[in-house]
Image (cartoon, rainbow, N blue to C red; front, side):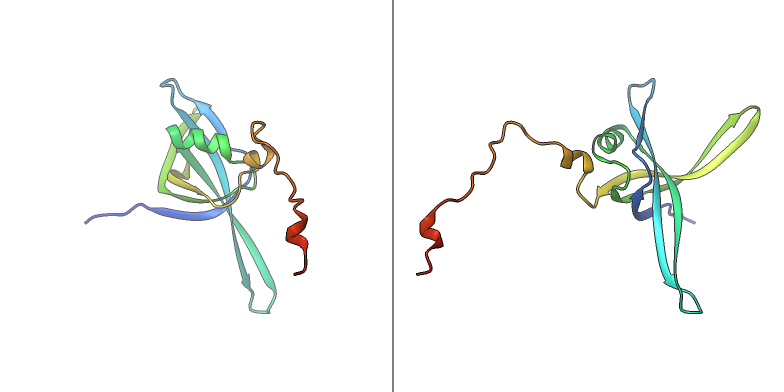
Length: 135
């Protein structure tokens, strides 16, 4: 019997991606995604719940996330579930996370908005009086 391990999530980053270099020279980016669900309860009240999901991206995808994403960035993550297991203080630990294959940026990057290209001249105002004549 075949199996399928595919995840598609849309949400906002809870903090800036944490970029970590590995011995191989490759980077890994760790992020947490907040996914909101809004609904009406049986008594008619609006309810909002939030699910937090850990996401990791590797190599070039990690570099791009570290460069362009910040806290609050809306993203769509495509990936697969992965069980991360490690040992700490003699105890085995584990957590379920999403290993991203693709991350689509759904809004403007706050990092890109703050940057301006100093080489581009400012747009000149249109002072052509003929365009303003009513006839």
